[in-house]
Length: 576
Image 1 (cartoon, helix red, strand yellow):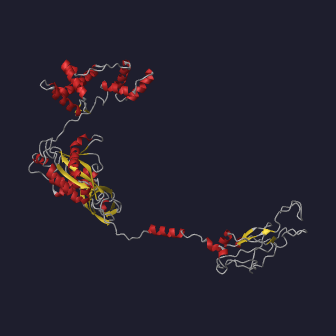
Image 2: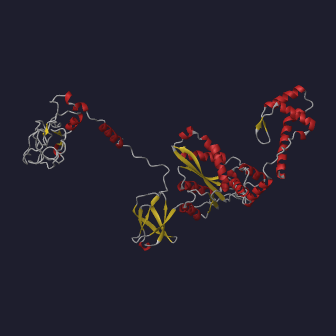
Image 3: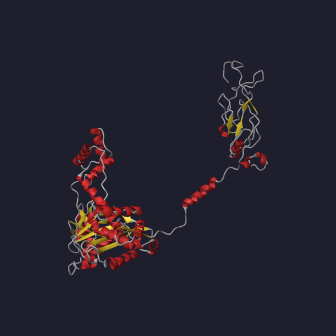
């Protein structure tokens, strides 16, 4: 065990001894009777006490009596616990090798050193053992070049302003953001404003009044948020001779003062804006008015714990008199936006969908367009840093910069009350709800007069032989069944060229009849080789559905219901 570890354990044992003595010191008074000493011991046993390590513990009556006896017998040394006799089970040489590997490369973790020891030594202690050994040896934490941050404060007012943004409550269902700038010397809030977006426009709304009322600072220190890295802020600072500084990514320590102010805002201002109170705020102007009242009445008038003075008094006492303020023209110039464009051969330039005309002598030149982001109709043209006139608008479809969104959204158009998709859904539902009325298709349940002859085709048997002569062209043939056919259909059949009869023929798609003289003959035994006989029809549901929708189904079957054996009949050796 190292000397540092022995010294650390001895210090812990001494703190424990002091805790025990502070607990029983009242019981050591010799003027107390046994009854008074016992009542006091019981009170101590019922209470909770904070031990040297910050834990809440209870001590029993028996332990209190034992500590009292030990002190009377051995003094304060008897209250100090003896250090435990810990015999390390890990070989010291392995721990020394692990410590050497850690010192060689402080970036190595305990798991990495464990893998190295297993590879080189064949065995390694657990990762937790190595971590505990590194802590005891003082090998944990950052490397030797650990960064140290000192306390910094500006020497006078308006020397340094620090800016940042804070997420605020929701007003009217929209999230708000607080932009604030704090003076580093006095901790006074020089500029602030709530907005509905964390963008450059809302940042300008907080910074511009601050410059107009509190003067121009020497430096502004901000983070790397999208609103703070925009080119317009750099242009504004350059116009007013302000040095703009951004903090390093991942190093927010330099903005500690504004972060501490935001903590005060959350603890003292936002905590009062519960759901009921926020629901009473109708507009963002009211929220800004409430925040201004809190800043000027409470924050600026309260003595700061670090400076020992109210922020506004410290700021007023550190600024020069009279305070130099920028002119209105300088502020307007600082907060104008600018973009560079190349003039076309037709002496025109485009800006966010708008077209402008410039002096023809500038064709092909690189010019700067300076404008107010909320008014794109008035644009100043500059070339080589000098003003050369105004840009004449040819076509203006956008009157404000895309980033310059208004604080209050435009009112939506009145609703017409027409839900087009709902109308389509109702029509589709009504159409799909109409099914086939199968009961109306049953012949058994209705008379012949109820049937519509124009919509229903009568299923008729086919009685005419397949080898019969077809009627002449242009003359309708008879209806063998005597029934009605669908409109536009006739009973005649076109010539049939196939040798094989078609068993199922439908309407105009029936195959042509076999030409005369080529059909099969009836054998001497009376067996039919080619003709057809009427087949009794059954009014099945399928037939009735087909007839209801204008189809004609004519079912035929050969008179001979089975094939004759091969090699018999007049056509020996031929397949039917």
